[in-house]
Length: 259
Image 1 (cartoon, rainbow, N blue to C red):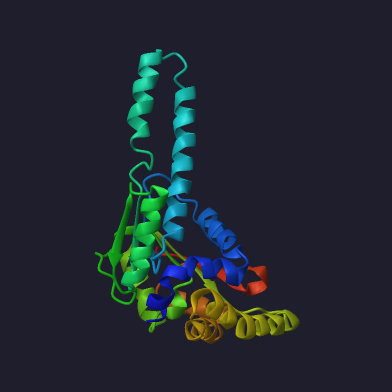
Image 2 (image 1 turned 180 degrees about the vertical axis):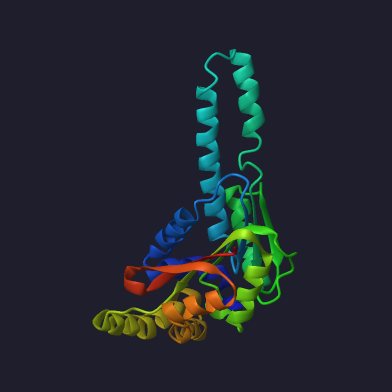
């Protein structure tokens, strides 16, 4: 119900709550992933498409650079041969990459699909209604699994992590971007003040929904700290698990591999 009520204002509220910094955090996640053409990505709790659209842009950019290098290597070809080669590659701008957005909330998916249509994203993109704790996908299917600002809303985090492990191919990567715990005591007090006094008010003013944003703030405070989440990811079977704090630990990116 929380996400049904905030779906239409979700992106506006993200910008307001984080002063737009959430966009930078998501860009950092994408650069950390560094996907190449052919990558199959599952983005869980990705309803409004922020990660999916960044993935498509990133892969297109890599693909374009590959194409330019290829053309440079064929300096001796005729104009006709170059044109035909370029046209053939141009129609496969993602190099067979695919991103599947999976979300439990129908309204969030609806907003994501509308955004995709408005922004012109269709190639290599699909939308699936599904539960992170019981994913509707085969074993060993995806190269990368991402969950951005979603795992703290999962009832059983351990089940979601086990499912992430199950659907990843051997060698696949798990990436989680989530609000975390600030280590600096002074900054932590200021952050708490902002979270509990300002964010619900913004929710009321912008989205007409105080209670949903009160819940979101409380869910951040109840979420496991960085080291505890790292241990949970390792317990699910992942190797080489580490994390990077961003903005003093306001958010963290956890990474692990299925080996």
